[in-house]
Length: 257
Image (cartoon, rainbow, N blue to C red):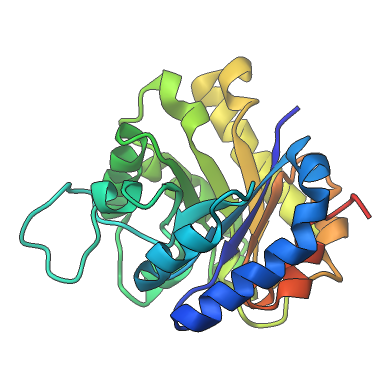
């Protein structure tokens, strides 16, 4: 059985003192259930880059793991404002979100650039969470499957077959991010099924069956159970609700209580 993945994306929020306080509150809520949670899921927090040192210290001794929201594909060089994989590894980062819709649509990241980041993350032993998703126009036009499968195929180009289990996929419909709208469990599972089918066709049952595909897009304590209870949905990528300790802790416990 695939382990669930509950991932917090704090986006561009908080300053160090707030980040430490939020981690402390999340830990106070979740640590008593750490053994139960560890049975079937990973819980990850991805703060902004400037907060990574503080969050790394605040998570010390916890089962919650540290992620990043983005990274460059090169190890070093003249890339002003960027953060490299070795820099992230130095603080214990094990996951990195790649291709988030905000990176694609605000910062105009291409599938080729996203692919280079995915390959770099795998090469450095981190787990990339490759994000795919369609816009409202694409969704309304019946193109959701074509869009997300194309993003998946191009994002994984050149990845050796035996490394496919080193990644996770996040389906995040752009029309549901930060809008208060979310895909119904049936809609989300249909896309997840298509993504899984594409992986099966390319990598075979044994490998593709181990890849986690999670859902992101206005995930809340109120809707998370109905989403992650679906056999094809392996967890959640959580935005706004991850900035409140009680909300995120409830999401991290999805289907336990």
